[in-house]
Every structure is written in C-alpha cells, then in structure tokens.
Image 1 (cartoon, helix red, strand yellow):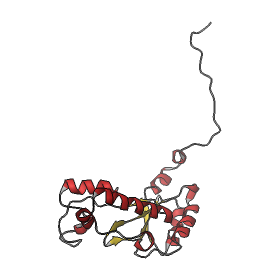
Image 2 (tube, one colour; image 1 turned 30 degrees about the horizontal axis):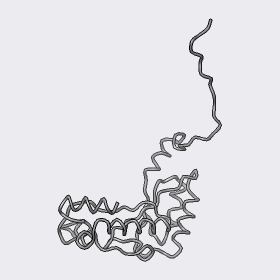
Image 3 (cartoon, one colour; image 1 turned 90 degrees about the horizontal axis):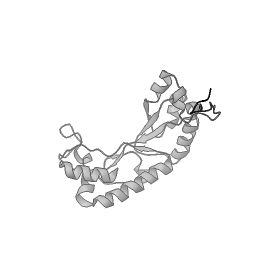
Image 4 (cartoon, one colour; image 1 turned 30 degrees about the vertical axis):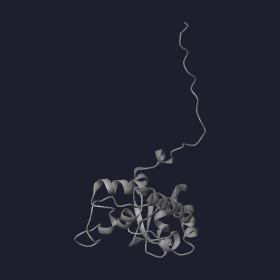
Length: 179
C-alpha cells in the first residue's frame, strides 16, 4: 500500500551534545550553582573546588597580584569536564573596589550620578568591563541598584554611597548605564 506521506528517515548524529550539562548528574548540576569565595592573592585555594565542578569563584581582597590573569587561566584549565567557572568580583567604585590596582579606579556610584552623565558612566563602566575581561574576570557583581540617600555604607544606611540615588528614576538610569 502506498502512503501520501513517506516516513522521515531516522538519522543519528555523532556530533557531541552542545549542552554538556544535559548528561550531568543532579549533584554535578547542583555544584554549578555554588560560588566559592577566594582571596585574589590566593586563587590556588579554589583548585579543589574547581576540580569538584563548582560554577563560580568570587574574588575578594583589595590588591590584585600582577599575575592574577595567569592564575585565573590556570584555574580555568583545571575545571571539571573542561567547563570553566565564572570568575566574579565586586567592582562597584568608591570604597568597594577589589581590583582597582589592576583595572583602574571609579568614584562612588553616588558621586558618579552627581558629577557624570549617564553616557559618561556607561563609558567608564565599559572600560572597566574590558579591563576585567583582560584579567580574566567575566562577572562584575555591580552595580547596587538599591535606593539609599544616606551617608553610609554603615549600620543605618547599608548601601549609602554605593547607591546611585534615593530617587528610583536616577538610580535606574545610572544603574542601567553602568550595566
């Protein structure tokens, strides 16, 4: 008997799966959700965690060593299954700068909003992002988009100068420019 619609041929592919996580165990997938803090001068302390498949390393400190990019490259090559962790840093400006010695300095976000145009903030943040990428950092945990007009950061005003403004329009305009 004939059919008006022929069955499509069944084919198999020998190409590797484009998404490696589809074959991972639940434990392996859960490890990708973990971010391990490590002093930027002791990146090797995250080696065991990257061998275990963690998904991110958060650098802290305030003086990146001159060979940080080499250390991060080594860390990425040691990652479980060849899936490198995200390398994160909190580089907001003002008093919250972990790598200013390596990527340049920014004023506090409040000061940026008071003295710079959104376009100027975008230019500075883009330059920061490029400098971070050159070192091997691919996630900046900034900006803070909380609304705070207080002097802090302190107990009363935890965001303080980390906030662009207490005004939601100004904070969002400058926050999006920074992003």
